[in-house]
Length: 263
Image (cartoon, rainbow, N blue to C red; front, side, top):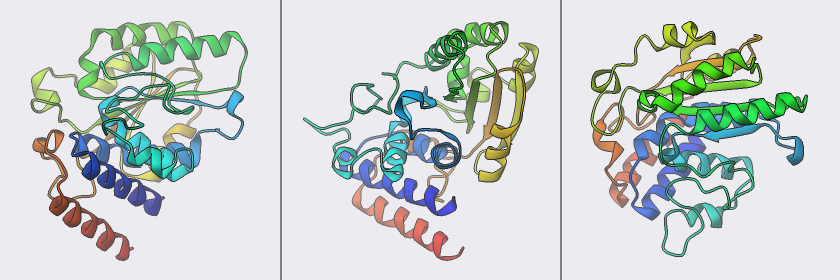
């Protein structure tokens, strides 16, 4: 799993450099979560009966594209067309660009409500399919998130699992300071969710949390580091916006390779 997550991060740095696009820190933050989901959890072999994954924090689209490529669900050519004039993939997800991109997103707060509707529909059909959502912690400030948070337990959606990428950095500073959401675990518990809190860079801890059995919708709060994997990007707000120049890419990839060699 560590090698897979490293490859995903390398893919992210590659397309960020080609596109000279922002949001590298946000994409690196959730790479471990996505590596576990796509290589240990999601059932995708039978497309019509696949599990659903929704990237609600769609400014991290590079992480999803890089993961889909690593899983063999997105070609290198399509991945490298990210954020290019006349290219293949937009800065935020568009469901018409790939069969495994489930929603068009970008405006925050929509992923959980959409997933709640999907999970409810699957329950009505008595389907065994599961729905997974990845949100940002700053996104949890949106009112639509809490409307869905109230509804999901009422509908007994035990087929819905939500991850919060809690790196505590959003566009203008610390999420916990700008509009404090803590104690977020107690808040979701009060809405009758099953809540687990894990190290969002520990693959086994993430897998164990997903495997935890419950008859409630599940919230997995993943404590993460923005820019994880590249030391000079880690927990630095500037990498919400700074671009990956050739020099930055060279330094970052060197770090990833050195870290991989140490394992």
